[in-house]
Amino acid sequence: MPDSVTRTDDAPARVRLVFLHGWGADANDLTPLGDALASTLSVPAECIQLEAPEAHPDGYGKQWYGLFPADWQAVPTAVQTLQQRLEQLSLGEIPLSKTVLIGFSQGGAMALHVGCNLPLAGVIGCSAYPHPNWQPPLVRPPVLLLHGLNDDVVPKEASEELHQLLQRGGMGCDLTTFPGGHAIPREAEDAMASSINVWLD
Image 1 (cartoon, rainbow, N blue to C red):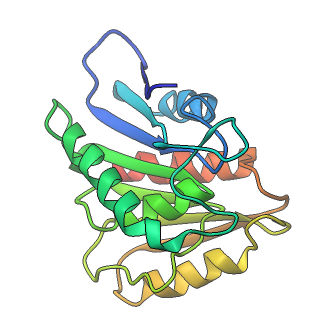
Image 2 (cartoon, rainbow, N blue to C red):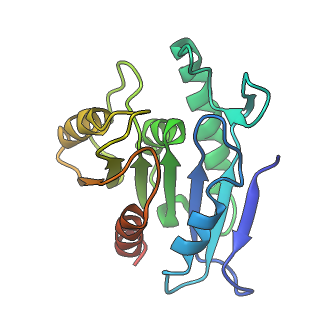
């Protein structure tokens, strides 16, 4: 499944939302979320669903790197490859400064690791976790973290650890928790829309 690109209307897009799916999903997994978030914006938006490059070991979906067991040695290459893909997007009409990167679960870990090193409008990690020994740069985009209180796949403590790491530089970082598990409920969607509208105003 190739990357998926959608636009809110026929007018040239002025902002961009980029989505990174979780382990075992594909580029279409977060399309409904992208449509919902783009509809809250006051300017034409482009949504890009990037697909992870590796096949999932169970034979369906994709992965950014092996996760069960975790292949942490593959993370640097995965991060470099994703950064190059995002930098390629900036060569078009919409700069990175008008781009928000949004990731769920494994995609959230990737979004934070890569996005904090780029001049993005903002980064959102939902049910995300930090890669081992990851240290965010002191200068980075604003970050929103979201996590279900009853997440039994990625415990909420993972986002709490991310929050501590990201606060050290004194840059913007909000952590919002919500009832539920490893999913993106309406409460999380509303929090994303609020931050995105501020960042892209």
